[in-house]
Figure 1 (cartoon, one colour):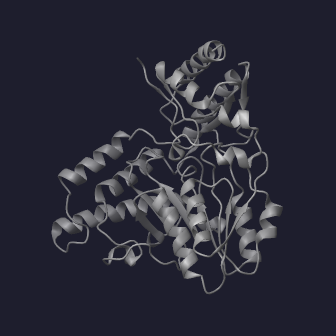
Figure 2: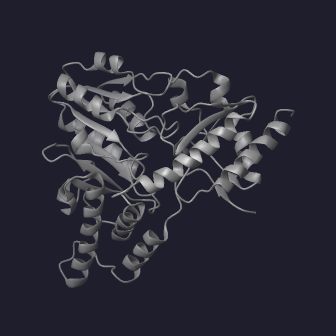
Length: 379
């Protein structure tokens, strides 16, 4: 059976370049990057080369990039590190109602710790309500976190506009953006946009799982979550995972950050083809906004629960998800925040592309949905 993998927002297949880089680091360049001898220095050089690659992709200085174990740690470090560092200045923390669980749950924990946490509402398109956000920006606001691209619907947030709003109304506050779903797909420029902290991850761009990075604007101060050695200016101590970091750099190079248009054109064509065929299916509703990132399409198949259709598609080799993979099947609070009715939320599916997908994958998806609608609705 052919595999038609359309769950790339959950994770991607590791590209050959990244796999080769990790293997070389594990078998040949295996030193501890903190060791002072030749083998250690060689490993450190590889780590710093990757740091430079990620920095170039974000158009920032390498010294502002800190490697983490992934997007979740980067987001946690940003939220808890900023909130603790700025506690004397205020206690209000604002996040959007559609954040990834690593931000959403961190915000809830900050509330339990005594912070004044506010969840900014979104429109029915899944975009942050700017007027509502502005009303929440009180004098004691110390941190605002709004994701660049939503991981379930692909809704793109106006990050540069939001950053200006935050810094104008709350100049002491730090602004963080989770760019995990945007990195490698659209140009992401935290310094130009006015973003103080930004999270990215390797395994969404065909790198290995277990590696991410946090951009921290030069001059922005946050406190560490971990304590130990001198690595990464003590902000993220512990022996760096040189194989995963080198693989991250290789994946970023393969993604072609200097010119993302080639991949984007391919994805736009896949998106156009998929939407045309999905909209022709009776009983299928598109939940993603019209201007969503073309890598993600969120749909509902009326009358069929998400998990039921997901497993039906799996039987024909088509792999999608019901929401964020981190939700592990729980109801989507993102779609709830958009005001979607219960039946559409309970029947939602996320389709997500990578540069390796083809129109054959879309054809298999449509055939699977057609057979599912014909048989599952009758049951």
